[in-house]
Image 1 (cartoon, each protein chain N blue to C red):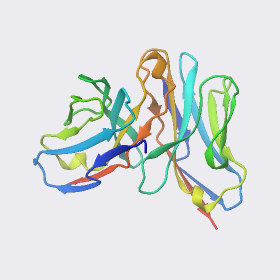
Image 2: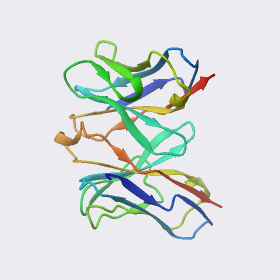
Image 3: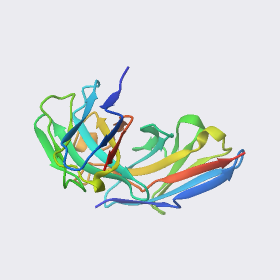
Image 4: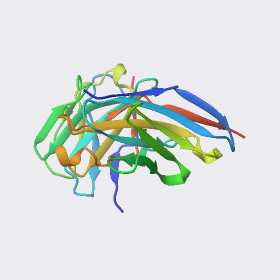
Length: 117
Length: 114
């Protein structure tokens, strides 16, 4: 089954304790991205990746890191989480990036609900 | 730069009534337009999209949307609401003008009353 998986689905942590949220897709997609969803603010993009070893900042990258060492995986790293990073996080992927990819459908993972105390 | 405005953060309808969720966009070049739906405790999934061709687009679960270039709109409709339609709906726009990355609206929560 074609899908985007995220782990963990729920996480409660404390300020400053490094954490990683994993994201994996089995569709051989080039483009992957991370969003956070907050009430009233909709989806805001954190980082995206056009292909292996190619990443760029989205609208709200502060406090986050990403890496893309393999095509299928795109982990989100919070090196020193703070309470304002409490949110619902989504990973998404699509077939390609660029001119041919602008019309592609985004496939979303099930979400990770993060609480930072 | 592209942008999306969804009018109304919440829309409430009775079961069986018409559903109308509004989306207006701005784009300097011809847009690609999407509607995604998010059911409770789930990720977003594509409802329908407009790329080229016919401006009336039909999607899953009886939803459809019409691209109106003159009005820069892409409103989502369904003739008769069902309880199972209660969800968050997001309009998104992308184009070939440079960034290629979709921009999402803030979402509209559809509430369906029995």
